Length: 206
Image: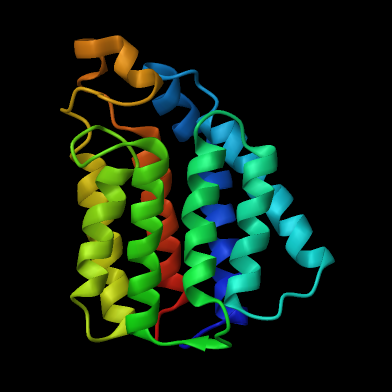
């Protein structure tokens, strides 16, 4: 499947469905080490994004992602709105002007997205944030020669990165206030990021 407008819309629809399905899980994960609203906020933002996408015509993949990014920034509270907004805006920028996107362009856009998220939040690998799922996923995507296989590898890497946050002590965000008490809890941002990559792998499967 090509990375075009329709497939990108399908990706966003799948991600929204995953967030809605796992809303309570994300709430519980965030309640353990944060303020407990990650699942609720992300679900509200993604449902609002679907409404915006259905109400307007999107010309290309970049336009789809920009619409979602701006909606999340305006509707999702806490750190998640700005961070997901930054990620998707950078991805949209990297895909701008392309009705269909090839794998190298897509991977490069993802790398710019990771750089944007890290610049915005200041997180590095091992800080127990969404970066722990994002970085290995993009590393895997950059090594791929086939879109479908590359996204499957990226989703698998994101899952491993997500699971690897459990034994870590948080060094960024609200969870860092807990110090050692943050150990033993899976990071909610890394979890929703895994669902983002998992949804992409399904949407763009050949």
